[in-house]
Amino acid sequence: MAERPSPEAGGNAIAVEVLEHAVAIRPSGEIDIETAPALRFALAEALTHASPAKPVTVDCSRVSFCDSSALNALLAARRAAQETGTVVRLAAPNHQLLRLLEMTGTLPLFPADHDPPPGDRSPEGWPDGLPQ
Image (cartoon, rainbow, N blue to C red; front, side, top):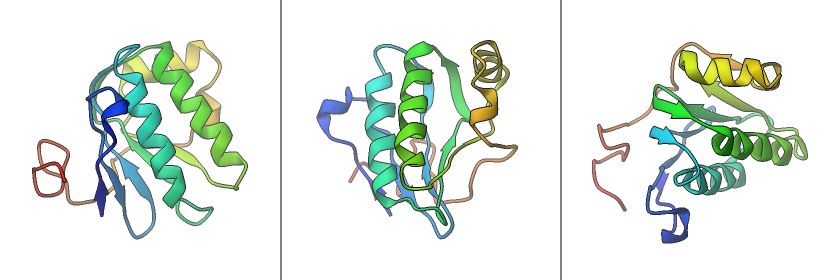
């Protein structure tokens, strides 16, 4: 299942995929002050479907850059997830993101997976290639 973020998310839709064992979001490109609202929105939406048995997994395999705006979105989602015992995981984080987390002392806060979660993903990030 994929859901389309609202237009308030900054026009950069990030699909939320409810998988069997996780809720995945798959941002791409640069996540900065202009695009972080879309990440924040997708994370909030993902948390509505997540649980302690179904963590939120952020597939970072197509993210080329993250700044402090993206980090703030991740930290806010982590804080919200903790209230329900849910975990926010990072999958396939690149060197730049790992360095940002390391420099800010936040690396230990996010479990990381080497590979992105499996799922129906088209090159555009939507399961069928089209926004719904």
